[in-house]
Image 1: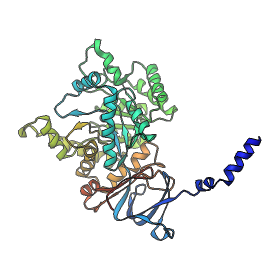
Image 2: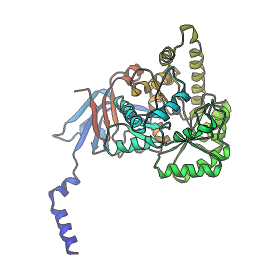
Image 3: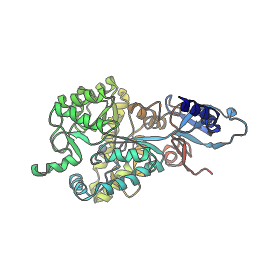
Image 4: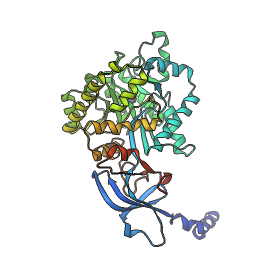
Length: 433
Ligand SMILES: [Zn+2]
């Protein structure tokens, strides 16, 4: 008891104890500030930051005397961007076959090498102002979770990672053509579901390894296997009971329909969604993460993949179809979340490649502010983190960037021109000085 009293006394009179309540503030003067919740641009706002958190947003005149602010008056200040569909622990060349490359990676690339390469890719997102990524599998057995933890504890610098762990999939996963006697290789990359009962255990394994969300492959196209509605229902029920969301990779319309029936929270890709499926998604407020690419990306990809000039007519059809589906989804009121799914090496950094999603959405007709909202606030809502990231507001984490240019009238050039990056209240890059 005496010891406790002495300790209490020391804490009360210690000068350091006083400092704990008086953390110094950092101030940012934003010429334009994007309000991602209300999808509008505000003028001349002062952002106060303490430690890792945003404290207040006020007028320039509220800057206390004798305090200097980081001057971003010539720029547009945005919440740190979010890419909702990444695979930082996987990379393949444009001319490589996905299954063959996966087998090669699983048998010839050690986990240590894979994580180190993944770290470099992850960091390149932060370099581009993408302060959070949702990493959706093809990451071995929880290597994404390890990478996330190393970043969160400050061992290495990188974006905030929301990790799914191994993808839950039906027999064979997405790695087609593997003989029965070698199916154990698939278990190194996917969690193969054999029944609704097994599905429940698979989610428990993920929970036990501290994943942030559950990713499933509702279908395995071009593999013909797919999860059943009952298996997906079991996954959703168990995940939701642990406060985890479920997002479903869907290539066929039927698998998307099954996933929606089973109660998933999001659909990834959804390239073949029928009108009736989109209507149902809008009714149930199920998020769509369209992961297609722009015309210039596809031209680069086709060249690297070895297509001749007269063999790339399909690119225009690809762009038209995706544009049509995206606009139908928007018209019906499906919440759109921005995600790149860029895992092909197109000879730029992964983070740079990821930013192609902005060009794709813009080419497909989305308005600049709507694209920003899809890559900030709506993406945070999908993660159930809208009070923490994707919105510059009091109590949120200070993940803040600034871009140079006219965001409304010169969107692509401006979103590419990131001049200031802050993550967790710490300035990561500042090119304005
Ligand atoms: Zn993907």
